[in-house]
Structures are given as structure tokens and as C-alpha cells.
Length: 52
Image 1 (cartoon, rainbow, N blue to C red):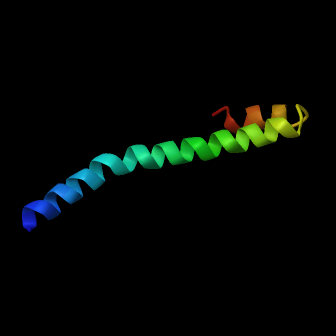
Image 2: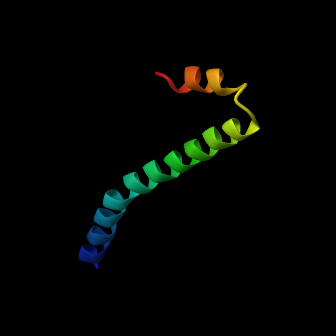
């Protein structure tokens, strides 16, 4: 039972960061896309906001 738990934790640690990264990446893409769809008036603000 302990081995199964260890494998589960291992899998969670291995798969969680990429999933989190993908989710945030998709949200950011959707946000940027919606902003650009509204018009290129917002483009300078977007480039300023995401240009770290």
C-alpha cells in the first residue's frame, strides 16, 4: 500500500507542474487573443504589459 502511495505521489509531482504550466499558458493565450480581437487599439498596452 505504501508503494502505491509513493508511486501516486511521484506521478503527481511529475505531472502537476507541466499541467499547471499548460493551464496558465492557455489562459494567457486566451486573454491575449481576446484583447487583440477587440481591436489593435489595445495592442500597445498588451505589449507593454507582457514585455518584461
